[in-house]
Image (tube, rainbow, N blue to C red; front, side):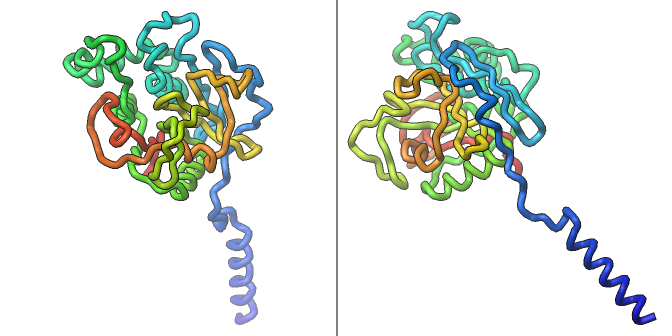
Length: 269
């Protein structure tokens, strides 16, 4: 009897040791870089990214291009709504084919209300402001997409949190600057690598080579034919990101102090 009990105990221990339930490290979700075109200098590029629920197809729009006039709102101030539109295309079916222009005219107005929407777009074009990261979270919530807005951060924590979120198969929206920073201390020197002023972009995932997949509505000369999709590392990108110094619930961009940070899309507590 004693030998039989020992055998059963040994067998159970062996089964538990070999069970997949014992693997606590989550598998990193990546996308093969070779599946993404080397030429994305187009008005709209559709990219397939591996996500937590399977492959998501994101539509990455240029702010200008043939869709609209160069003097339109989207062409001049449309980076934030372009990043939002990109995310909606990959996470919803209802808004999958919305353009940035349609998101501005229909979805923004519906979610924010006629009064708030008109207050921004009744101004002269130069005075109109893009949707803020806070405003983006409101639209994501309306569309059934959970999110977490991280306003304040230190560089190392942001790198780790964003990388982990991307590797979980979910996207991130960030705000970048034309000045480098380190833990909230900004350099006075200008650096236009990612922005001529302030700029919003979507991070869609991680490649199998460990690079961040950046969906960018703006063209940068340094990126050659790779425009709608660019590649970098979080260690590099965090230098251009903007930690907030104060909180704001403005639906549209107001200041660098209150409208920085980043959004973890499809965030699960």
